[in-house]
Length: 332
Image (tube, rainbow, N blue to C red; front, side, top):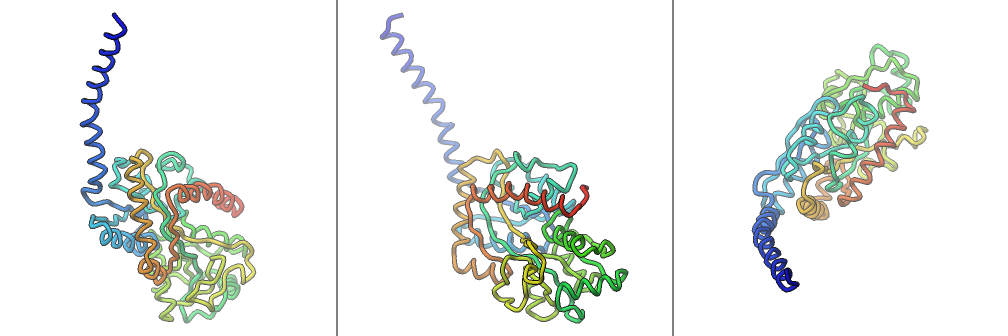
């Protein structure tokens, strides 16, 4: 074969390959351009009424208004969030099933002997949403005005006091266990509920005497005077609860816990779809209206992109493992 014949054949093969590949490439680009063509589900691994559910409903409503597309919240609570997280890990990576996760994603690695997902491999970051400090809250008629005063009451009458928390592995559950260890209160029973809203209802109904939970579900009840917030667990006081001290101000060193919300997608989701979700979500989070709406619900907007979101999630895996080990919390 002459050199010229070889060149012609190579050109023909290239042209044929391009002719075959071009329609497929165009179809792929068209699919990305049309995304999403059907409702995008944000799966919340908790029951309705908790912080992730509240955040999800505010953000999906904003995304619908901004993009003209359909976004819905789907609650799949149970097993400390593992049911919902496992469900999304095994969903088709097509951009239509997204996990709206809290810190439980990172916590559960150290808390459970077996998980239905690999926290290092099964997901990728999309973006951070918002963060809220956790709280210790009692009914307004409870004599205790501080955490130390509640501890004294609970130690004096251990059979009459318990603490309600969201699912095992959530940051509020962990902080309740840490408080019990630090104050030597093994008899203070922890009653775990399917979600933060359920745990708060137990306090409101008198089933529980202390609620360890995120701020958003409790916030309207605190403002209304139905509940008293003994402490927030953030690094600083919450802006519109200026009289409520932090745990650190009450003598609990390094007692900082928060409920953070983040969007994660199945690991093989096309990067073009991740980018679209990241950009559209960050766009709605940046508006003054969204910041005000989330603040009134008890959140501070934390609009960070995919890379920063994933870095925070993976860093917390080691952080919470250390906290759980130091508190002596047994694995499940």
